Length: 348
Ligand SMILES: [Zn+2]
Ligand SMILES: [Zn+2]
Image (cartoon, rainbow, N blue to C red; front, side):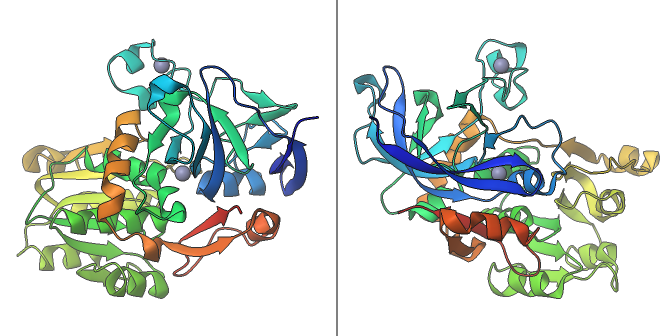
């Protein structure tokens, strides 16, 4: 009789059940990890609300995961007790994009078809143990608390986003939307010596961005013109980059107006329902403005995020830590509002 583990398993919209399943055993070629912390991302909240379509059920989700190594193959350099962050998507390593290092666009992403006792695994961080390919495991410095190590994945996504720009010391950037992903853009922009303008209609989020994260200024786009605010910070030029973390067409159009010559607009958020954006051809042409998308993260982005974690303070970005038993209640609250940032599930 194998030992058991607890999971929170999605069975459908607004149907998540606490279960007791068999615990995975160490297996050749795999790393067995005891999960310590799993961040609740928009993806899992949308599975719960039913907005995320085409998810096979039942499913154990949770993809922002930190844990401790229980057992690992000798050639991985990992040993029992190591603190690790996990990169829980499947990257085939042989498609056109993987070969070119663009493995965030792997054509087989998520198509690994893993299951555990009849439950699909999309991450699996809402369970106490996962058995994963060594390529998905990144050792984290002991100084990083588990609930912060769980943020390696979203930090990797934001590093990918910054990679679309050339911003650096002395530049000014704008971040539209100050939820967790917007806030992470603020933190990493500050780290790179940038002035940061935040645009968000929520007063609590604006205050959080300025007071807790050190944003230079914050503007309410419903009462003040973010374009004027962007120009004010840059002697009328417009900012070097705008990161759009709110998926509404108007925000993208505003971003193009906020950007100065040689500047970048990065569409970070997805838009549901899909939005069409009107662009001023000549504004793009004469000012040499780049418009880029950014999606997820490569393995290398996760590696870099893990290297970065000991040197940055992400503590303000974890608003609450809850137990696995509290996950159904937390998801029923819906998308976090106000200054609430990541809620992280921690396991004993
Ligand atoms: Zn995520
Ligand atoms: Zn691939």
